Length: 164
Ligand code: PNS
Image 1 (cartoon, rainbow, N blue to C red):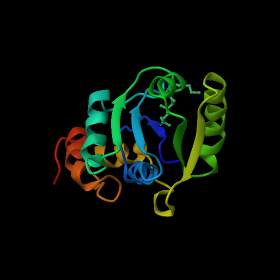
Image 2: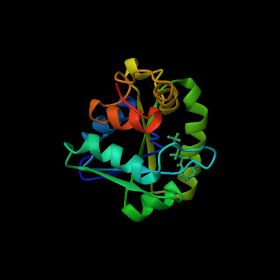
Image 3: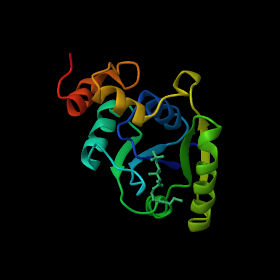
Image 4: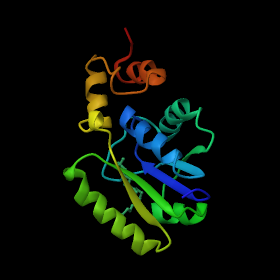
């Protein structure tokens, strides 16, 4: 799949070590990977779009073929605008599957030129989610195992006010 562009969409509120693992592996598969911070209108976000983009940029700076953008619109349209042929999604468990399957089918209808490719989450990240990170950090818990080290302080200070 060298020579091709892929997009990796998500809410990333905030980015976790699970997301970063998927981003790193996908970056190794494509010439260009655009990580796109998007809006799921069913969710209420704790971090602004700019904050979510900045946190991802802070942990992907060593990946020269990765770009990070924000887009408030349809993923199918974003992929078309960027000339991307692949949407990368991480799958944690069967519980993710039904929703992701529906989105993949809808995106294929909206943009027949795009394929959704699922990467399985690393076993150690199976249980991990941004909501879990937010809950632990906002109650003063240590999120060092859940988010990349460079952004742990920023996330904790933002959600709890201080980082011990
Ligand atoms: O990290 P999330 O919240 O599971 O990501 C979901 C997201 C943001 C990728 C999804 O809601 C999305 O693609 N939103 C963009 C709007 C869109 O294209 N919706 C139709 C998909 S069927």
